[in-house]
Length: 466
Image (cartoon, rainbow, N blue to C red; front, side, top):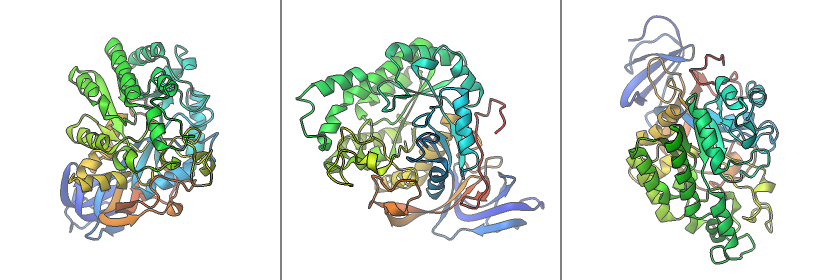
């Protein structure tokens, strides 16, 4: 039974995922932390006492380690106010913001402070930050300075990023960055596509049929599996040479799974993520001009998708994160004949899915007989472990009181105009998903427009105040 001290909140549920076990529970919260977990009928003196209906379960909040917020600089694409509202609506209680496509990118401490100043007063979920590794900040001391300022790791591209202010690393620079980070055990997170392979595909008329940029098949052929596989092999070589740590972002090609399995068996410190859109959609059902589905690397075929699911279940792929990468509707459908069809050669490549990512993965898991707790493991506990946040991703005494009331069997048909992110475009429009997020608590407070700003996060080992 909880102690006699008055609590801020108690949440009662017949089914709660409490530190790895389903059980009846009353979760007592004080000062943003879980302080006691008792039985459903325990008497707890609380300012707010909530009992979930029987169709809802209590889950730890989702930790999305791959979000492009784009503020400052491209706030018309997205911003902290809209992105964090979308996160909360989707049961996401923590996001880690990518160092691009904001201007300036987060490649110096000064740029990080600009991000923090923008995020602090607007964010209704907790926010952490990735730094960036680009040619200009290697060997300058900027990577260590960003590490000491609390970023969770460093993103690098091995192929052009799509924005001029964030250039990619060559193979030599990849080794240099990983060696520099290994000195202080920093994590390098990698967009793994090989630029030489992209150039070769673009130059091959047999590989990329002329289609005026509208055909999805042509777009997929322009970024073939070998491009990902080769780049991941380069990451593995750099790990072997430096003893560093690396995380492969947004794996789309199942042909790289054997390379990943071999690297892990060798003991190299490699982790891998895939994304909800690779687990939900398939190339066979994407129409020409449907650039709301454009992302890099691309969504591939149905058989490939099923191999990604298998790799999640067997542990080859470690986590799932949204890679929420929004833009304006005009950029997303650029070059097309009308406002709802674009040209794959010029449209912005990125999926807007932050609010829907958890429900999309749960829907796919449900169809395959995979339990809800597995999805929570990939998208909450696993991502929290990836970025090094031990008080997140679980319901346990001492953990952050980041909680979600979730009705897993409620069907929902998605209407893009009902979503919270800034621009009304998403690949999930009109999709039928399962799961309704009934309530999201961040640090024990109900997330919403009237909630106080959430916390800005740093790596726990920095000693930097948030």
